[in-house]
Each structure stands twice: as C-alpha cells, then as structure tokens.
Image (cartoon, rainbow, N blue to C red; front, side, top):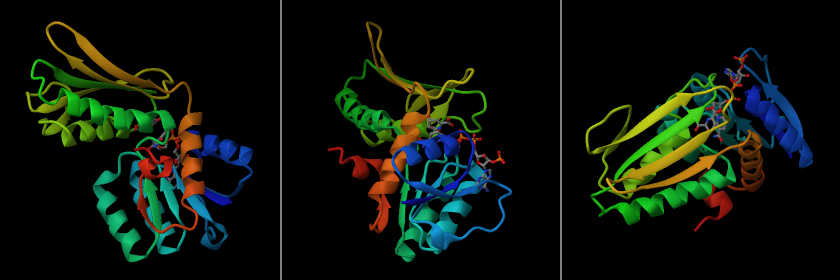
Length: 233
Ligand SMILES: NC(=O)C1=CN([C@@H]2O[C@H](COP(=O)(O)OP(=O)(O)OC[C@H]3O[C@@H](n4cnc5c(N)ncnc54)[C@H](OP(=O)(O)O)[C@@H]3O)[C@@H](O)[C@H]2O)C=CC1
Ligand SMILES: O=C(O)C1=N[C@H](C(=O)O)C[C@H](O)C1
C-alpha cells in the first residue's frame, strides 16, 4: 500500500517505521512547509499533524479521492464538516482520538462501567489524563471520548477541566516529562474507590492501530470508527 503521511513529527515517524515493517511504502511525508504533493500516488493518507492543520489535510484528501485516517486531536469543532464532505464526495474517513487497540477496548469497558454505575448515586466519577509536556491540547482527545462515553450512558450532562458541579465530569490534565498517554476513570464513594486505567508504554500502539485502520479502509466508502475496524461488540 502507498501511504502518505500528513505530519512527520513524533507520530509520523513512528507510523513510517510500523508501516514499513508491514511492507507498505511511504510515498509522501508532508509537514507544514512541504511543497506540492501528488494525491494520485496515495492509496491512503494518515494524518497526525496539528489541531489547526487537520481539517485542511483531511478535506484535501477527501476532495482528491484519497481515503484518510486521522488521529490529530483538538480540531473536533470541524468534525461534522469533515463527515458531511466525506458523504458528499463518497469518500472514506476514520477519526479516532486514540488508535491503540487497548484504548479502544478501554472505551467500550468505560461505557459498560458507566451503565453499571448509573443508578449508584453513592459514587462520583472523575478522570485524569497524563501526557508529555509538548502536547498542545487539554484535555486529551482520549479523555473527551471517555467523557462522552460516560455521558451517553449515565445522568452526567457534560465534562469540564478542573473543579465542577454535580452534573459535570471533572477532568484533570497533567503534563509530565515524555509520558506517552495515561488515562484513568475513577468512581469514588465514601467507602471505596473503583478505577479503570490504560497506560501506553510508548507510541508504537497508536501507530500500529492507525496502520491497521489504513489497511482496513481500502476499497470501502463511508465514515468509520476503530470499533468498526476492530469489530468490537
Ligand atoms: N489518535 C491517536 O492515537 C494519537 C493522536 N495523537 C495526536 O496526533 C497529533 C500529532 O502528534 P505528534 O506526532 O506527537 O506531534 P508532533 O508535534 O511531534 O508532530 C506534528 C507534526 O505536524 C506537522 N505539521 C504542522 N502543520 C502541518 C500541516 N499543515 N500539514 C502537515 N503537517 C503539519 C508539524 O510540523 P512542524 O514541526 O514543522 O510544525 C509536526 O511535524 C496531535 O494532535 C496528537 O494529540 C498523538 C498520538 C496518538
Ligand atoms: O498527544 C499525544 O501524544 C496523544 N494524543 C492523543 C489524545 O489527545 O488523546 C492520544 C494519546 O493519548 C497520545
């Protein structure tokens, strides 16, 4: 498969390595100051760029008939526009706030736990995410997806960074060293604590998930999620 990388930073380089180990070719490495590039050489594009660049990269690929996988976080105010464009152009698009296989299982576990805790008023939920100090957005895209999973399956109405009132899920964002990504969902009562946690040991899992998504989307049209890719029930 001929893969174009939009964003050749920490993740772009990791994806290059994982993709080459799976016998794919990298046909373009596109950063902020890259010149012209040729969409006709791309079987699929993988975007791990920056919040203000992602929508332009994704829409350019869709307009030019290139299936696109995006892991960039912090641009979701334009997500519905990307979905509409994909449907209009009969394109193919997957966004995931986190491509690691373990986190996608964690997303489903989190929803199931929220359903089980729904009527147990003794417990108050909170969330913590820890990332490296270069991260631009807070809270992380993964923490937002986890909060949305709880909101869909409980009486919580919204999430908020820091301290909150009772209908909100508090998210604490910490930036420590080179932490690849740690997410904890905690239910606290007066008598006990129940927590689920995912810890990424490095960036390889994110890259592997994105390459698996790129392989899976070949020949398909539509807007998909990692739940579709991994066939999680
Ligand atoms: N969904 C997931 O599983 C994961 C998502 N992420 C997300 O992916 C994104 C990238 O992360 P990471 O690789 O660590 O960040 P980096 O800062 O290391 O890399 C981002 C790259 O994007 C480049 N860039 C800037 N503008 C553009 C543009 N217009 N077109 C193409 N490339 C551009 C930057 O170039 P320059 O340096 O020249 O400005 C840089 O090389 C972040 O939003 C992060 O949150 C990260 C890990 C996992
Ligand atoms: O910026 C990162 O590094 C990461 N970003 C994603 C997020 O915002 O959730 C995924 C992962 O945790 C790493």
